[in-house]
Structures are given as C-alpha cells and as structure tokens.
Length: 193
Image (cartoon, one colour):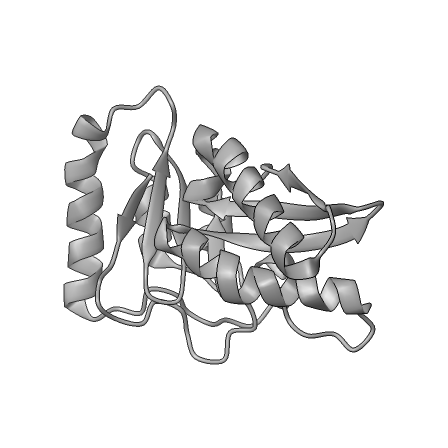
C-alpha cells in the first residue's frame, strides 16, 4: 500500500466515521460520499482499494501488480486532485434504495452508554493508543464486538491487506489489552472488505 499525506483535510467536516474505504468503482459513485478521485484511482489497472483517513490517502494494489507500473499514474491522479482544490469526498443524499448506506456508519469506537466497563476500556484503548499507530501506517481499526474474552476487530486500509499486520498488530494489541484492561483478552481480526 502507498500512503499519501497531502497536507490538507481529506474527509468532509461532520463525518461520523474517521475513515471511508472504497473497495470497488461502484462505491465511489454511491451516496452518501461519492469520490471522483477514488473512482479515477480504482480505474487504474491493479488498484483494488482507496482508503481516506482524516488527513491521508492510502491506495492498495493487487498482489500481482507491480508498484513500478502503477505508482506514476496513482501519484499523478492524487497530485492533480489535491492541487486543483477539488473536493476529495463529497456529501450526497442517499437515493431511495439506500445506496451507499454502509459508507457513513458511526465510529465503532464512539462512546455508548450501554457498553460495559470492560468494553468502554477496550474502546478507549483502541481510540487513544492503537488507532493512532494504525493510522500512521495508512489504516484504521473497527471495533466489532467483545465476546468470550475475544475482542473482535476489523482492519481497514493498508492494514487490511498487510500480512505482517496479523501477527504484529495481534501481539501488540493483546499486550496493550493485558496491560491496560488487566486481563487476558484475545484480538480476533476480520480482514474482509
């Protein structure tokens, strides 16, 4: 994956999620957050996802593609979009069919008064210690649940496709959970789209 730091805000103000991930060209056109840049990037042969964080862009290629072949076009598209001042992500009304519904979900780490004390501690740890480190590498993490001593997480962006993320993140997250939450918890990752 390639991470771009364009020195500007990528996501629109008021977005309820800290990221948007586009995994196919159709999702780049669908409300509530169409992205012309993501559409152009996903049309590049070999590019299979575009991930926007608050102030960064991560582009992931297919395993059989070579960065030497796709990087010049990707770099050109990102540079052109940023320098032109075009909106990277737009906000559009959802159609009657509810297209794009999954794009604007609430932040999974947001406070919820219904959470148990342990879940609250897990979410706070993910938000304050783990998410910033993962975002530094061009990814993000979603909290999916806590059951039977297992913290269920979904990796996004660069971390979703990185083989080392499974071992490195799992060990790091589990060590932090033990240290801060005070009990043995296992991190379980969903790497799907």
